[in-house]
Amino acid sequence: MRLRKTQERVTVHSTLPWEVEHLSSLAGQGSEWSLSSIGEQGQVLGEINSRTYAIRLRPGMEIVDRQVVVLSPMESTSR
Image 1 (cartoon, one colour):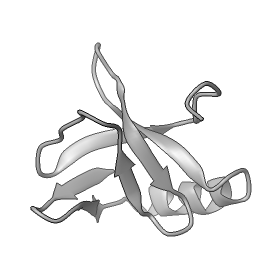
Image 2: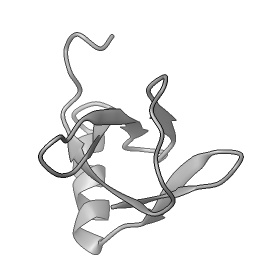
Image 3: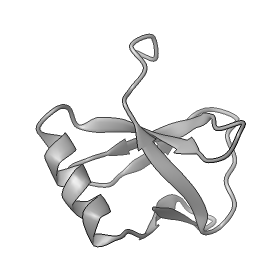
C-alpha cells in the first residue's frame, strides 16, 4: 500500500483490492499491524489500525509522500 503525507497527518493513499481484503481479515486477529518500509533495510515505521486505517508513526520516523509500505505482525516487545 502507499501512504500519503500531508502537513497534518499520514493516511492511506492507495490500496489494492487484496490489501483491503487482507486488512479486513487481520481485524479479527487484532486491530493493529506494523507498517514496514520495503527493501534490504526494511524497518518498522509505525502501526496501522486494521479497522479504521488510522496510522501512527513511531517517534523519529519520517516518510515521503506516497511511500510504499508492507504489513507485518506487531512485535511482541513494542507494547
